Image 1 (tube, helix red, strand yellow):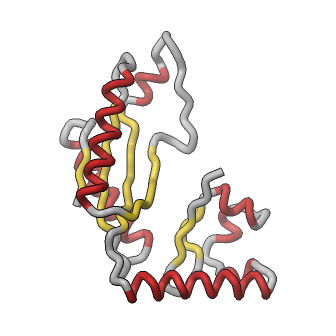
Image 2 (cartoon, helix red, strand yellow):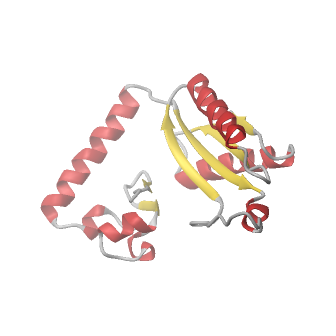
Image 3 (cartoon, one colour):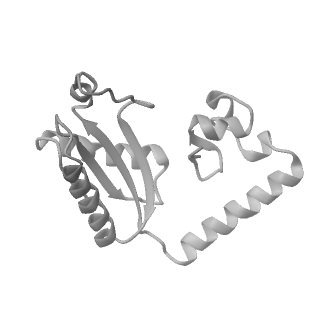
Length: 167
């Protein structure tokens, strides 16, 4: 079970996946926009709050700006689904998102490896991905970072699919 969430500067949940909402035994809509204080018993809330503040302090004190938001879209998934030799199933559509703490050079090496491995698999029709990756701007909220990275993803798709754009 992969858990994913983002909080804004007021520590309100601005994005969360279904698995994360299940931790609260709630639907995503019931958690969105709330703080841990509204969702958790007092003692657990203070532990989470302390962790949030320590993380924020660490990021600002160490001027960490090497997180990259990465969006991946599976190109031509519909063609693969219609392939008589097998069926592929989508889980949550054909887009995936990740957050990685690496330098730009390391992120590029990871992307090159993913692209190389996809070619080696040898599916017919060939599976390809389009990727947008952008340095996370901690002065912006999740939606702004997502929108900027999403633009790069679609820029990559316009280049003919099967490529990435890293900024």
